Image (cartoon, rainbow, N blue to C red; front, side, top):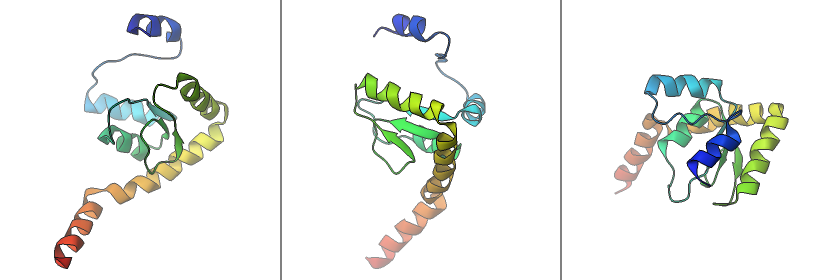
Length: 123
């Protein structure tokens, strides 16, 4: 699907923003119910952790420890189905978002440093 076609088809519900500042990104995350990351080649990125910390339910092609749905890459029908499900079941999406806020805490820098310290001490 071309960018132009996607914009025309989704114009009422989707905004293509391009680059946004960190401040604007925080504002957008704070208003979001669901975060969708349909990556084909990307691994776990910081943006997924940011979405979790913001309390979003997740729909992504990247398997990870989040509350939400992992979908197959390039499977548009599955992606749409899961996003639609979360918007039709907002209580479930809100619950997933709260779970993500808790889950992401184990990926804080201080927690990661504790793990590194333990590994170094065992050597």
